[in-house]
Every structure is written in C-alpha cells, then in structure tokens.
Image (cartoon, rainbow, N blue to C red; front, side):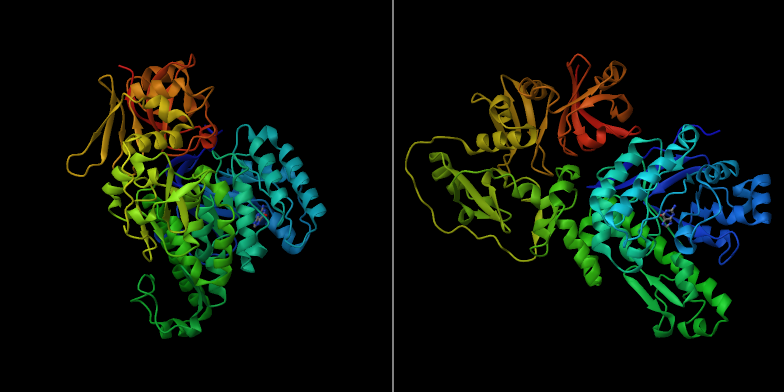
Length: 617
Ligand code: GUN
C-alpha cells in the first residue's frame, strides 16, 4: 500500500537536536513538529483554523473512532482522512491512554492495529502497556516486555506499514534503555516515548531528562522520536535538545477549557491577564476584558487558537535555534523560568560526557559562558578532558583573550623549553596549543576570567622547538588520534603564516600542501596528501568512512557521501571533523567533513553524511 517506510533525513543539527524531515503516504513532516490531538467527536477548532495556525500533521484516536458506530462506519467506508477532513499526515493512537485513564479497553492488540491500517492511518500504534511513574521496577519491566511482545504480534503488518512502537519503562533509566533497544531493533519505524503524561503534568522535568536521554541514546537515529503528550511549549526546547523530533498534545484545548493561556515560558489564567501578548492571533480582535466576557464555548475555541499559536511560535523558534546552533544557550537561559526546569537543566549537565559524542567539533556561533554551569556543557566538557596527566606549567599570565599567547612567551619561554604549558579558560585548564581552536578562542565570557600578560622569564638557551609546529601536531593528535601529529607533520614541513595576522594558514611538505588551518574554528582541514599520511597512521577503520564501489566513483569526483552507501565507519567520528573516505579495498578516494557522529552514520539511511573537500584526481 505504501512506498518506503519512515526514515529521518537530517538537515541541521546541534548535538542531539536536529532539524529533519520524513515522508508519510500523505506528505512530508518537517521536524521538530507537533501533531495536535483531534477528538473526532468534538470540534473545538475547525481543521482550516488549525491549518492557519500552522498545523501540518495531526494525531487522533482510533479507539474513539472504533467505539462509535457512526464514526467507525464512515472511517471504514471513506477513510480516516475524509472522516477528519484533512489530507495531510495523520497518526492514530490505540486506546492505551484510555485504558490507563478508564481501565481496560474492549479491543485486542492486533485487531486495534488492523483497524488503523484499514481506515488508512499514516502511522498506527500498538496497544502498548502504559507504565505509571508509581509502578515498581518489576511491574514496569513486565510492561516493557509485554509491549515488545505486542509489537511482535504485528511484525508482519509492520513490513509494509509505519507502526509506532512506544518506549515504556516508567521512571527507570535502565528499563527505558532496554525498551528503546527492543523497539529500535524491531520493525517499528516510529518511536514514541510513552508513560510520561503524569510526569509532564507534575513538572517532573528532571526525571523526564533521564527518560528522554536514556531512550534516545539507545534508539535507532533513523527513526523519529516522539514525546507522547508533550505539548506545553515550556518543555519543548529542552526535549528537542535531548533528541525529541515530534510532539502531540491536547493541551491547547485542555488548557482552554479551564481558561488557561499558554505562553512560551509558562501558563497564565485568563482572569489574571491585563493584555493579550503582541503575537496572539486574538490581539486586535479582542481585549483581555472582552475575551473574559465571551460565552464559555466561544471563549474555549478562541483560547485554543491562542494556545496553538504559542506552540507553533515556540517550535519555529526552536527550529531557528538549531539552524543557528544556539539551542543549548536558549534552553540554558529559559531553564531559569521555573525551578523544575532549572533542576532538569542541571540534570542534563550530568550527561555531558555522554552527549559529547554527538556534539560538533565546532558550532557556528561563539561559545557563551554565563556562569559555572555553562562550563559543564558538553561543548566545554570536551576540552576539559583534553589535558591528560603530567605536569603543566601555568602560562595564563602570558595569554590574553583576543590577542592569544604573547610573542615573547612563545619565543623566549615556550620554544626554549620542553615543558607542557597550559592556560586557564574559565575554570578549565587547557594546553596552550588549543588557544586558537573552538571553543577557546570563539568564546564570550560573562566576566573576564583570563589574566593579561605580566612577567617574562627569559631562558636564554637556544631554541628547542617551534610553537607553530607543536600546535599543529597537537591539533592533529586531537582531531585524528595520538601520534597523528608527528606522522602528518615531519620536521621538514613548512608552515605558511598570514602576513597580516601571523596566523597559520597552510602546511606543506616536499612541495605538497598537507593541511590548512580553518579560520572559523582553528582546526585542521586535510588535503589528499594529508589524508594519505593520516591513513598510514590509522589502523582498522580509524578516521575512515568506507563506501561502496558505486559511491566511491562519485566521491572521487567530489560528490558528497550519502548514508545509504556507507559500508562501515569509525564509531568515534565527531560531527564536523575531517574524515577519510575509502573504497572497499581501503584506497583513499576523498577527504571531507563528517556531518554526523560515527554512531549516527551507521543508522541514518537517507541524506548526506560527508561533504567532500578534496578528492582523487
Ligand atoms: N498517550 C499518552 N501516553 C501514551 C502512551 O504511553 N502510549 C500510547 N499509546 N498513547 C499515549
């Protein structure tokens, strides 16, 4: 019935957050996005009004449709899209949530899914077992197992249809991991995180952080992650930062019923409002006072319009933030709007070491440090771990932010000794060789924690080493693994510096350019010659992306590497680092920039994985 199954194409990223898209039988869904919940019995807002508010896809409940003879007949006869009056992507839920709220439902799992397929749902849902936050570990484990068994009952249907496999596991991170692995490795093409509505309602955001991260990191990245019931704009940015692509929510109506109005940072009661915000679609048509005087039914519909606008406005801001790679900062700042969010933000920082694997070598905007918590973000934690053991001499006194290390220090101290030197960047001690690279130079601090040059020690001995050579070797070791620096840049190499700034530009050896130093992030970009040298020093898959022969031919001409042509790759690849593109016989065909981590490269099936910078002639 359908063509290819759902698979995420990644179009933009910042760590685990992504801008993406996937295809359904009724059109493409751009992510992050929300499916507003439509109750087929209640028409709070017309479909047209919802489309005007920004709706491009929706979710409805197959259980409600099936229970009502009139709706069931119409849905079976004319199809779900005709019943709802919407020709875009429609997901259906199963009745799991109703069984959680009202007790057992009268239908079985397989016939529930068959019904959804029969009425033409784009994404169907099994009758998963809802675990509550109060369930014991044992009870939650049973629910995880039974949910997986229920998916297995529809494995044959999932061959040709998009069926969602909810990740359960209550508040237990280990169970969320197991559930995510079970659902990811099976035939489900869409992964909602379930059982979280009570946590969302009780502002238990820190526990949600545990749940989302453990689910996401154990899921297949080619499958969309959906947060069931997560539709309050207040938590959406944080959820997206942790890898959530999709939301659904009835909050726009539920809150409207109680005269509650959504805002990006919280909720306000209509009775307390002095004026409608500038962005509200109601502004200009009603004053707050006039809105309060509307009859209950009309007031509910009007507030729903406002609430939906708040949700779509926030989603648009979130997408923009990922595009400019400032979502982390946005969430960091916004977490101050509620203590529960702030607690959750601090919980995220405990995962920095894990998130680091998915974090880019550099981001377009500078790193911004507001306080000590900023220095715990994965962008900072990565450089925190660079300095290994061994004695370092503090050279902070010879470093000034903006000017870098003083010339005098380099010539009269650094180059006349073999000592290791470090500078303080915020509270992090980093090797001086990293002074120009992201995020050290590309950073803005709330206060100047860096000292300016003070005293000089003239060693007077003859020159023992060259700072620029040490620096590029250090960067090569950092980017390509220990020992790469010496192999890539032998003593005979020549370092070309800019006449105006003194900064390193290109590095040559025997008349061939090996690498250039990128202006925007202070890291190395390889040429083919440089790539060959790195390869000799990289055993196995190290630094490599191995592609099929038919791709290698194109990559050798400078065309990008697509995910579906990748045979194998180094799992330690960092997004935006340089990689070696090799054919199945391990011949270097090109060098370029990885767009995802190595872990992700093995999972995505659609889109560009590596942009080629240099290729075989
Ligand atoms: N809606 C809200 N939570 C859930 C859940 O855990 N499972 C399903 N199927 N629907 C939901």
